[in-house]
Image (cartoon, rainbow, N blue to C red):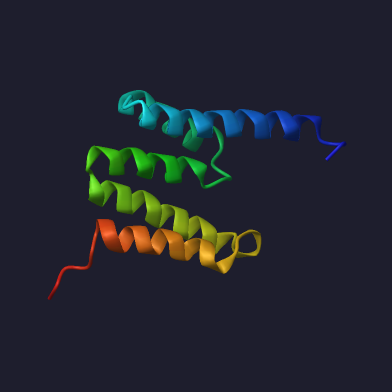
Length: 106
């Protein structure tokens, strides 16, 4: 909004950092991608981007269980802020988790 100078700056930095993680993952610079994702978690705890991006880093490394844990955190976040998200949004993550960390056949 026009009133929120700081909000716009905040959004830009968040978007930039978020996109940086994607670019680093694409370039195979996973350590940098991870530290940028952790920066997001630290500085923007009120959005789910950090967990999403960190999950992608783990996924790229083949660390499926860690990736699934990150995506579970995203789902928790979505549930806590249900009014800000479409219901289908959580399903996307549920599907990823099912693929990465399928329930053990018992």
